[in-house]
Structure formats: C-alpha cells, structure tokens
Length: 221
Image (cartoon, rainbow, N blue to C red):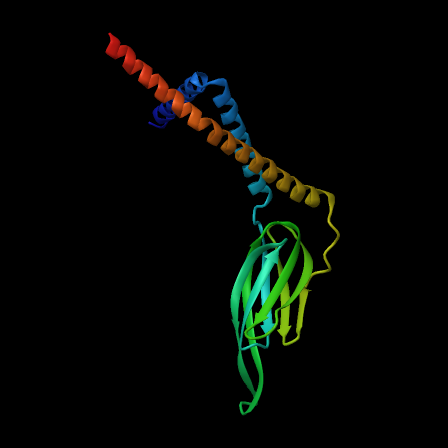
C-alpha cells in the first residue's frame, strides 16, 4: 500500500510539473521574464527571513518607581515590545508609607547576532527617559537585561554576562546581506508592479479590440 501511494504521489508531481512547464512555455517572453523576476524576489525575501529568524531571547526585567508609565523597547530601530507599567506604595514594616515600586518581566524573541537595544519609559504626566545598550546574542540562548527606572534616572545593565564585543565579520555580514536581499527583493516587486500597471490597460484594450474585430467578422459572414 505504501509503495502504491508513493508511486501515485510521484505520478501526480510529474503531472503537475508537465502542466506547469506547458503553461510557462505558452507565456510570452515578457511574461516569462516577469515571472522569473517575481520568483527571484520571493527567494530574496525568503533569505531575508531566514537570516532574521528569531532564534534567541531577550529577558527584560524592570524595576521602577512609577504609579503608571509606558515602556517601549526597540531592536535596531524597530519597535519589538511595549507595555504598561504600574506601581504601588510599599509600606515599611507594614506601617510607614514608603516609595512607589513596581516590576515587570517579559521574554522578547530576537534574532541571533549583535543588536542595539533602546528602552524608553514614559511616566504618566512626566518626561520620557531612554537609554541604549548593545548586546551580542547567540542562537538558542537567552540574555537578561535589567532596567532600573526612577524619576529622573533610567539605567540598563546586562545581568550575568560580559560587555558586548565589537561586531564580528560573520554576524555583521549576515545582517548586511539580509538588508541587501530585502532591498533588492522590494525593488524588483516595485518594478514589476509599475510594469503591470503600465501594461495592463494596453493589454485589456488589445483584448477588447480583438473581440470587437471578431464580432464584426462574424456579423459580415
């Protein structure tokens, strides 16, 4: 039964391949070029996605002194996480009112490599505070970033790790290649869209003119 199913699957794949090949052969040269460029752009976008796979984690821990605030985290300029912060007054010895305290813990997926992390805290009714730090993330690992946010003071620190090293060759090249792939893919898609918008009306008019001529010929007969 398994052998028969395998044979049927192979025959089905071969049939689909023949039908696709015949369809491509019937296309005009311009259409085939456009199809090839579109497939090439799809491959570039897929490579960009592969290079930017989120295979590491950023463990964000926040200690703050605000009753209410917004926190935002950017990775290489792209917003990766945002949330509300809330705090309450903690009493000392259960009797004396102390300062406002609050905390937050969140895991943020991130791709491996060296990234610039920017954190901003916007207190309710106050001025925004932000700080930036660079971190090197290895695949399938987690790095913990401690954020201390108090009125007038925001600091970031990696916990249990050393300072981030300068960008290495492979990591920097991977990030650069990913950006190039996405840029080229986007340019190809934009060019194909512009070409389609420019040529489609003419193609529709030619089809309509052909239909009118065919009707006129049939009427004359």
